[in-house]
Length: 139
Image (cartoon, rainbow, N blue to C red):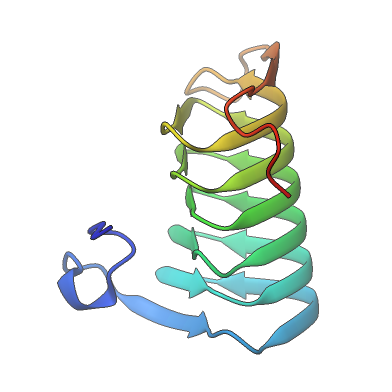
């Protein structure tokens, strides 16, 4: 599973501003710029101006306010993204997603509501309830 965005060694020339590795537990708010990766357990609010990566070992509960969000771990809560939200294979996302572009790859689980937004803030969102049957039996 060599994904360009998840492999720190083969990054495009975007600026990495930090990461939280396995074994770290955070309860609170985190604001970041640039590309930031989380592979830890967190409860709270994440604010990202660029790319936020929730790695395979991440378990996040709360709210994400960001631009581009890539999820390979577990997320429960609300995502509000100005750009693309990608849910990778084996990821589990529960809650609400507000975004102009949502990609759910085969093998991913998404149980919640998706609000597809137009690129302009003035557009009224369209709510689409989605429940994936592919992930039944996962825990």
